[in-house]
Length: 309
Length: 309
Image 1 (cartoon, helix red, strand yellow):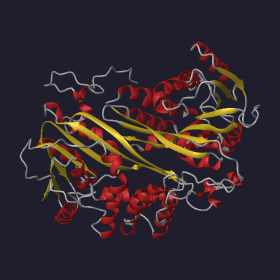
Image 2: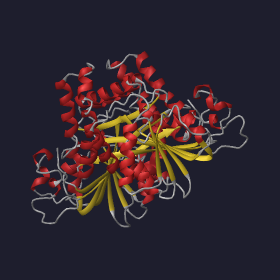
Image 3: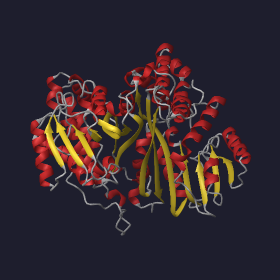
Image 4: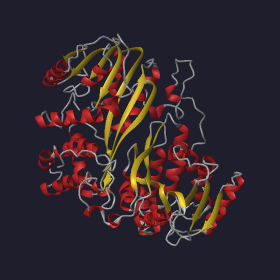
């Protein structure tokens, strides 16, 4: 939830609180399987106000984190929060992903969360970050996907309100539907052994804390946050937008259901062979693009192919 | 994938093969956590051609299954398949869910898979099946949800082709978006301690067998199967439909991604108190409808409520 380009959610206090709520509710779902060894160095690219930084640094207390964000204001807030949490293993720096002040192969691991959705050329950001990794290092990417949103009772007004957010993010150069692309983006950026797992948030009324923490205070609050921008851009009128928001809140009610999915990808430092810069459509075979021309090792992805149609 | 009403997929050989493929690919995801104790009696309501029956009966060899379907032809095929598999713990019967020849409280467990999607009044079917359960018995419900479908590359033509299937199923009295409603339907039907878990099928090109078995041969083949019906009903022209199908197959390609989610609910035999027939919207509180007026026990769903908005 930060960017090196336009940031459509804005830097307001309410947004700040929303990010805190979201981080709290989703910590286990998104981060429980991320931990870094003692002494390893980790670049968190796009730390925003530190919503993930505190979790990361706490879960790997003997790893050394470098957390950067393009916004000096966000970096200051993130620093305040990690200090408040008593963490001493994070150093902060204001920096743009596309102009990073680090040497190639200077980190053991890279962590990127809710960042690619805001970038015009996300694959280029991943390529840049991949170059900063030491051979054998890992990259972790987490993104949401607003197209994964569905609910009961269904509502076309609610879908249109969500579409306003998607359209605004697109106009700002981002992509709110990027979660489903984490795998192809990481592969195209040259990462090896990429594995993506979806993290679905499923909420029904047996989970009132999640209905409140996620459906109401995270997702619907985020969509509600673009109300003025959507109306100003002519994407919706006030009545239609408000009806959509009402219907979204309704899905957190007694018989309501709400679904949203995040995608988490983990890959290894690529070898940077000549095929790494080739678009996937120019490569042969279903998975053959992951066997580099200059890499004689068989890859784990060389599974038998079933008859393709 | 069977019905006591119109069955839009048809009873063709290809459809039969599709169901076999689907059952094979999805067995672990959908059924690995379903097992019945020795000696217990299980009603499989709507067994179709037995795609799930073989799995169920094999996984619980000492349980006794009664599998019914409204189609005598399907029942015959299901019987043939269980016999071929050497299973002796299943008896079959042609019967309609809405006119079942069984006494109240005559089964320990009920299993319903891909059936509610075809019914005009699914909650009534669940009420009927609930009455057949002994107190303390369990009901398991599994349904897909076509609204959970999204993919890369995204394609409005593909979404419109899927929408044809959804519309046709709606015209036939069914609901292809019912997966998300499993929780509220089970609660409304009077089941207790309902827990629903989503089972998401996520396919990228690191999983070529799943791309072939699910994206191509299960989902896209199913949508392709309504081509003539969709054109005849004026929901699409041939060129538009075929473009959508091409784009769906495309998502199983090198850089493609495909997502679909099933929902599995498990509940316990309800006490049948006076609130069991009350629509959820007339009940008080977020989860209070699961505490019956005639049931003094605290329910496990009596979680603290956060401030609702």
